[in-house]
Image (cartoon, rainbow, N blue to C red; front, side, top):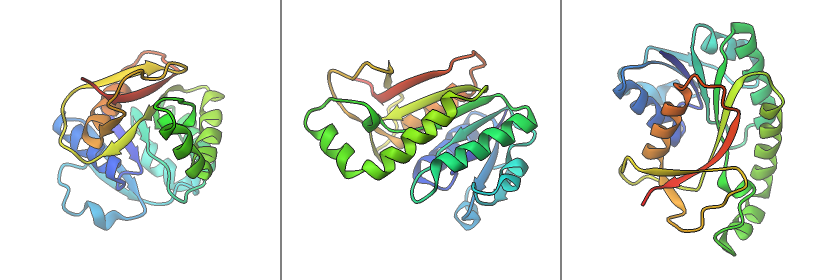
Length: 203
């Protein structure tokens, strides 16, 4: 299987690349900072570009079987997602996994979540608009909303809740390595999912 990773040089993106390589998949890394991948063997193709440019994304997505999109920071997330979806439709690539945030709709733990959502309200607005774009496309998509991310070692355990169901107990965090494993597993599933899931560490 050939997987394109958008946002491949983000901390989570790097973990996705490591996980996909370990599983024997073909990996296409799309990034604005290719120098960060110079010591990462096993990547089949590195495409340098910016997600606001459709032609850059088309080069990275053509020939792949699925796309994992990790888009954030100062990017116009909704615009990038529109371009990703268009590039996938043109290339007839049907499987999309998008990384959003648990803060978007969750209420627990109180009052941590609402306070954090207010602090990151600009970023949440971007992610909300991007999710709206995805929900209205024709692709086979899955949206994962991770809790607080950390860089601790992988545990191989995580919990998933469908949209509308908060986690009732902690931990309300997950390491990037475990999130990456969940993302790679999701993108390789061929079922027509169209689901939104919160994801956190298992117990």
